[in-house]
Length: 242
Ligand SMILES: *Cc1c(COP(=O)(O)O)cnc(C)c1O
Image (tube, rainbow, N blue to C red):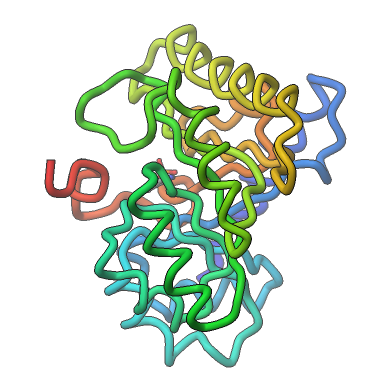
C-alpha cells in the first residue's frame, strides 16, 4: 500500500522536475492514474490520498469497479477504444471525459444518446501520431476536419487531443509523436472553431512522461510506474478488434 503512495510521490517528482527543466508550472500538468487491471482496493488507496483522476480502458472494468469506488470522490476518464454499442453503458458510470473519440460515427452515436439524456460530455480527440496501423486514433491529416465535424454536436465539448506515443526506446521518435500532436493542436486553435477548446494535450506514459511534458503535455497517463507491471500486454487494450 505504501508502495503505491510512494510511487505516486516519485511520479510527482518526475513531473515536477520535467516542468522545472522546461520553465513550466507543475500545476499545468495533471497526473491521470491509468488503472486498467488494477483492483478497486488498490485504486482506493490512491483516491483516499487525494489522487483522484483515473483513466480506464474498458467499459466492463469501469462497471466492475463502480460500486467499490462510487463513494470515494474521484473523476474517471475513458482512455480506451470505445465501441458504439458501449456508449449507453459508459454514460451510466460517471465518466466525465472520453479521451479516445476518433471517428465521426462514434461521435454521432454519442451525440444521439447525450441528446436523449439531455446532457453533455467532455472529450479529447485521439490522434494516431505514430502511424502504426495497430493503434486507434484519427490520422494526423484528418484530425482538424474531424474536430470541425464533431464541433457541430452541441452535446460534445472538445477540450483537446490525446495520443499514445510510439512504443519505442528511441526518445527522438517518441518525441516526434508528441511534437506532431502539439502541432495539430496549434493548427486547430488557429481555425477558431466555435465551441472547441484546445487546452488539453493528453500524452506521456510511464516511460516517456518527461519527453511529453517537454513537448507540452497537460495530462500524463501513468500506470506501470505506480501500480507495477500488468499481466496483459498493452496490445490487448490497444489493438482490440484490429
Ligand atoms: C495503459 C495506458 C497508459 C499507461 O501506460 P503505462 O506505460 O503503464 O504508464 C496510458 N495511456 C493509455 C491509453 C493506456 O492504455
